[in-house]
Length: 151
Image (cartoon, rainbow, N blue to C red; front, top):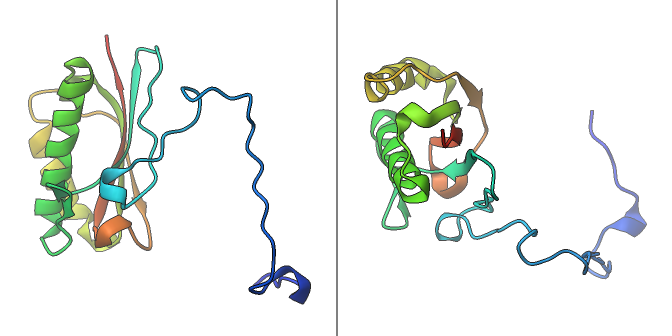
């Protein structure tokens, strides 16, 4: 069932106003600088012992490796996660508390399981969710959202 918008709400002459709370500090506003401009992902963690990573893509030097196999894409995304963990707080895969893997092809779940298990082979596997999505930035087939703890 689709929702229809009245004629007077659409069209090129429609004025769109955006309200921005001017009392918010620059530090409290969500950062929107995602990887190479392919998405809008928050990167701020504040002073918590939790570390949040959103929109980790299989990219190298700003190029999303959308033409590679799902195994290569997930491995590259995990490489990027590993580097981000070290860069942020000298953390490791052992500090990952929750992982969400977003896939454009649910049939790739077996391949994802294999790569996932092999990369976390020396630590307890963190809980994870595998979510099917229609599309991802840069034409990627996989994307990660991660919560880690600096303990």
